[in-house]
Image 1 (cartoon, rainbow, N blue to C red):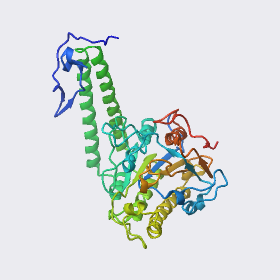
Image 2: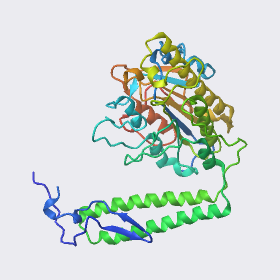
Image 3: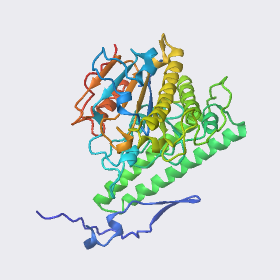
Image 4: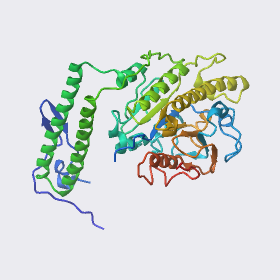
Length: 434
């Protein structure tokens, strides 16, 4: 079969060709015209659905997390007993993971994307669950998503359709300011002016692209059309931002949190972010929240009875003393989850609780941190209007795609999605309440 070459008689473009606007430039995608011809290889309801996705990167000891029995009559495991108040409000899953996602700790980048082989040299991430959902419902709130982090570094659970990491926020004070602090009229005007300038700049670029498309061949024109569409998408987001700049932010009786970023203060840092996530949902500032709880190689957690670093404990969990220290940390994390669920349950909305309207998914990219195993992930889903109170068990050797759960969650958000990432449908056994 012969390869088809498109020979353009139109003008040649330099690979350094830029679009130029007032005080700004934008590079073009690589076009055939830049290389020699023969060198080319409905608005939401009054009570909307919401989602919080949590990744605890060091996970939980499997034998302490998973129940031994399946179905509705399972006896809660030691860790799940800390959620006894919500026994009928959550489902725990066994035998789920992302196919071909490996790499131990480095699999955290794929937790919400399912992109395979994150340690490979040519790895390119894909869109994360929250960002996919934001494409459909993100415009309905001031913030399409709220991406939070408990712990140091630059890690994030959120990635664009092009696999670009979206930064997460570690400082509670900045999150609070973002959610609740209204700027002065001059500050708000300056923000709106920047947004307006950005939009006019994008319009200028789009006009140049449209003009340029007349001077290139068919394949290049298709690339430019795609590029133009991307610019229009940016413009749309800028327009939405301007709308929300003119609307007053919701009041809050909560005092601004202090930034305690001490590595050992895992419990306080987690509590701060969980509280802010709840407040963000309660005020409908966003409907999509991710929280990356990352310990990495931090020093020890400041809890009575804990003497060794968290990461080191995961590799020594077979010893009685170190196992007990690890249990103290992981139980504290489960208690914070219970506190979050309690706060959501205490808030009412349209005759239901906020927990009824909010899916809270907690999991980990590690099924066993000490073995760097990325199979049989510890995952539970609470709230959100599903029929809960069950332990769903799938094949522990040939795991069910975790992305099947993501498809179920997307559909619960009102998004028409039949698949996502490696997901080939909704997850079996999890049913929506009428």
